[in-house]
Image 1 (tube, rainbow, N blue to C red):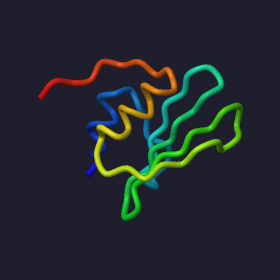
Image 2 (spheres, rainbow, N blue to C red; image 1 turned 135 degrees about the vertical axis):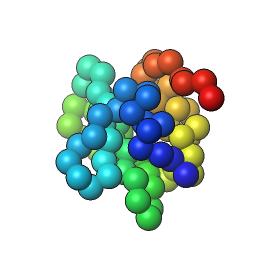
Image 3 (spheres, helix red, strand yellow; image 1 turned 90 degrees about the vertical axis):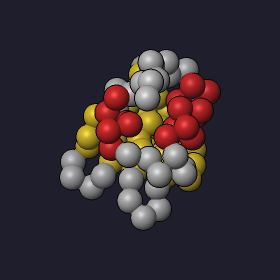
Length: 76
């Protein structure tokens, strides 16, 4: 399960009160939606291009890295 704190440590910012967290770079935006059906959405130039279900923050890291997002993964 992905936690709010894990996303904040990776540079995501909250978007409203609906459990959405966003990170952007250039024309690419990744939105992680937490809740019953956790998933992430990838937008290029404002258009939804991909959506992935996620089970844990490792999935978020994989997708972000594959799209060129680089950030320091916090150590436990």
